[in-house]
Image 1: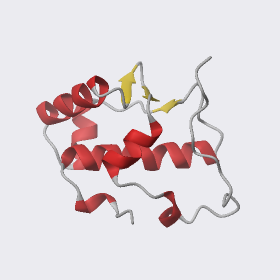
Image 2: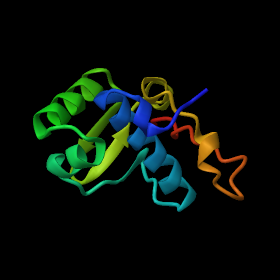
Image 3: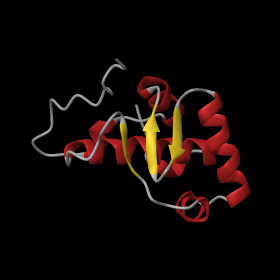
Image 4: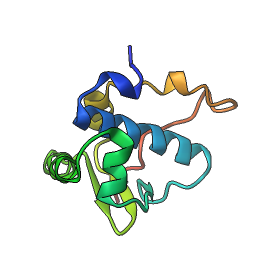
Length: 111
């Protein structure tokens, strides 16, 4: 069962944040090409997940190297939804997104 953002290491917290924001942005219709707006600096991301800017940089490099996500040009691009959810121990059920019980969070296939 998934847990909230607090029970993870910094990489897990960032992955969980990315998953949760993706789910919320998808409900609002803001996901485009498997990406959503995330116009935050690494400093701001670090403050959000309780990590230094150096650690955030390492996390982003690791997630990109693992082909899970990429942060570029103010957008977060989800490259492997299932892998990202696994890294985050993410379960969208806790979000209680009303009227979206059948929401397909799987990113569209490339093509």
